[in-house]
Image 1: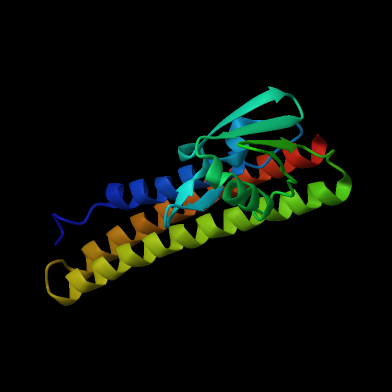
Image 2 (image 1 turned 180 degrees about the vertical axis):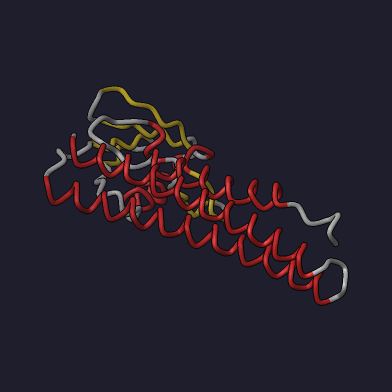
Length: 186
């Protein structure tokens, strides 16, 4: 088991949680329209949940407008509903297979809402990191219990897992703080 356990593998799984947080935060707008804003949105299409960019072309024709060109016109209503229900505060306007998404001005209240959404994303990332930590610690305890490693080895590796956890959480906190500052200063 000692040969199979890898702190690097645990760290890599934590890094994936941090990368997922970065992607989610990229979808939070800070004043200008961006095609990546709609990336976190999934649409119920063809019996499954699909990312919006797999059933439509997302473009930015002007700085305060996003255009979504749905490939299958019958999916336009589902895409419009997904955008409206996304929690991003967007109000799409459907025109056949084309959906225009005007971006409202960011007022103080909306900025606070976006900051709360960013905090929610960060907490999800922290929870994911803690789950990875728990999995690693469980592996170590099992290996120690089965006699595959000594208590000293388990203790050393568990300290390394904790350090990796602390580093990942610190990274999440730094990324979130920067995004919240960006949201509040626009």
